[in-house]
Image 1: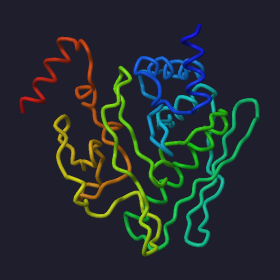
Image 2: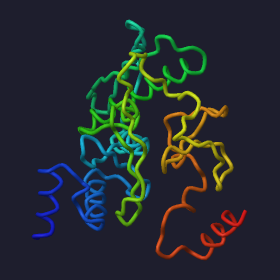
Image 3: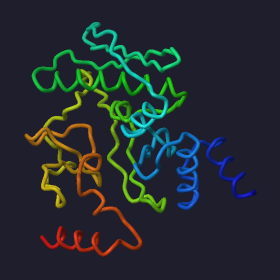
Length: 255
């Protein structure tokens, strides 16, 4: 009982998962998933370092499971351009007639072509996920919101609760003032490195220790490659991989 109380005190009162031991982080993660009826094996939550604290944020899989769990249907009710900001309003509704609405907003002024199209799609995705989290009563950030938060860092934690990597700080430039960044980045900076995934051979951009997908032309988009790579399981640390997993892993790393 004392261990459980200590776990609750450190997380709820202090709000910092970094203060937990790796086993406690795993226990807390599973308790959150259990309380919400989510499958922890699909990694519905990821970790974010914000304001000096390690927190959970909702991934795409989280909102999809919540919609399925509560039979939530989401409809886009409006799309409008307000002073250079593309604003999408999404409405969530369930079988009992309960409704909720939320907006997704992204600055698109000055953007053209694919950059503008990606930003508009991001606004719609953000609206759908934000209204889902609001409808489910889950007060946490969605992954579409994390890329625009200054000083936010995505933290990679393995299945044992160990911190194995942190992305570069996403601080916004102080001067001169520029339009908000689009979902597609400019050409990679000195801290970014273009490569090919050793698992699926897709083009990726490394930012620190985190691989991101690209638009196919060497420009990074705000989506980690681990979300889409069909071979991602080969790169996760496991204590005892099966014989089939080890054989597949050896084949990948030998090439």
